[in-house]
Image (cartoon, rainbow, N blue to C red; front, side, top):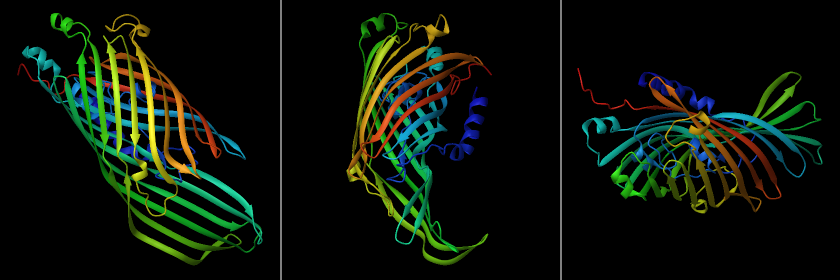
Length: 443
C-alpha cells in the first residue's frame, strides 16, 4: 500500500501549485488577501463546515491537529470541488462554472494498532504525524469598466490572479482521555493585479498599464485540544468489542502571525501606431519593496457526540479577530471581526460494516452562517448555506478506501453591492493503510 500512496503524494505535490489555482470568478478578491479559503475534511464539508471535535480511528481531521492522537491507520486523502454560481449586482448578472483541486493531506499514526493487538497490551500514549497542502486565499477576476469624461469615452480593464497556499506539518499526542496537537503552516504564493486604461476613440492611441505583484511568505502556528468522555465506560470495560458512546469537547487556537509581502510594481504608458506598440514612458517602478501584514488570532470551540458509531452530531463556533490584522501596502478594503457558527448530523445505518453499500455508508447534513472578515463601502460580507453528503467504503489491496461526495447550497452577499448564489459539489477519496510501523514477527 505504501508503494502506492507515496508516489501519489509526491506526484500531486509537484503539480499542486499549478492545479490548485482557481478559475472561479471572484469579484471581491481584489480586497484584503483575496477570497479566503478554509479547508475541511469531507466529513466537515458535508456537516455544515463543523467538526473540530470529531474523531475517527481511520480519518485525519485537518480542523484540529489533536485528532492525530486518535488516528490508528494511515489516512491519505485528495479532494476536488466543482462550483456553479450566479452573481448579481445593481446593473448586471453573470453565471460561472469552475473547479479546483482543494487539498492533499496524509495522516500517519506513529504507533501501529496491530502491534498493540499482537503484544496484548494497551498503549497509554499514542502519537500521530500529518502533512498537507491546501489553499489559504484565491484571487481571480477579469472585467471591463466603460465610462466617459470631458475628453471622451474611457475603458478600464482589470484583472487579478494568483493566491496564497499553505504547507502544513502537524503532530498530535494522546494520553487516555486527553489529546493535544500542533500544526505549523508555511504560507506562500503570489497575488497579481493588472489594469489597462485608454481612451476608446483616440488615434493614435495611448494606453496606461499598471501591474502590481506581491510575493507572500510566512509561518502560522496552530494548537488544538480534545477531551473525550466515554459515556458507557462500564459497558465498555465488560466487552471491549462494544461500540462506545462518546462526547468530545475541543478548542483550536490559530495564533496571530506575520506575513511578509514582497512587492513588484510598474506603471508605464504605451503608444499604439497601427499594429506597432511602443513604450513611451515608465511612470513608476518598484522592486523588492518589502511590506508586512498580519493574520489574526482565531479561536474555534467544538462539540461532537458519537452514539456507538451509529449516529452523531457536531457543532462549532469560531471567532477571528480581523480588526487587529494589518493589510500590506497597496491592498484595498477594511477588516472586521468575523464570527462563524456551524453544525451537522450524521448517520450510518449499519455501524458494523456489514450489509449493502447503502447500509454501510455514512450520511451527513449540516448548515452554517458566517459574518465579517471584510467590509466594503461600509457593507459587511455574509455567507450561509446548507450541506449534504455521504461516504462509502471499498476494499483495496487488502486495505480499505472511502469515496466521499458532498453537496453545498449557499449564498454570499455584501448587502446592496453584490449577491452570489452557488451550488458546489465536493469530491474526495481516502485510502487507509494499517501496515505503517508494523513490527516484523518473522525474518
